[in-house]
Length: 154
Image (cartoon, rainbow, N blue to C red; front, side, top):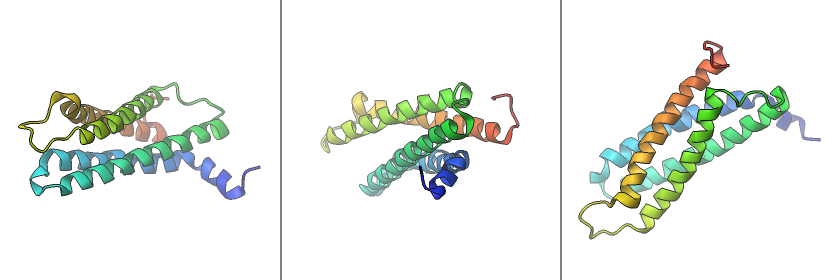
């Protein structure tokens, strides 16, 4: 049997999920996209901030989604994921994982002598990142509406 404190965490999994992902996406990821887009004149520091922030976003997302899956299994017996929030959230996680891979590829192909970033993988990473962040922010709104019971998303 699981320790009592862990069962308490799982029972509050929806609240922890929401808190983690609201900090991760609307706040951290949006700021990180801004850093990557507008603060390159600061030199290498923009990259360090962007990478660290987005690894936090990825970790928070994986922890938050895992807690929610366990919460759904424990408290709701699997009845939750077949709604807009669950479907869009699954898409965001898959896009995020693709973004991490694409970002790592772009980093390893970086050439300081190039005139402009190539479409693959750099610009693809730029645009997929913007789209993923936008989708995650829409999904954050659907999650808040679902949690507060103020929408027909159930």
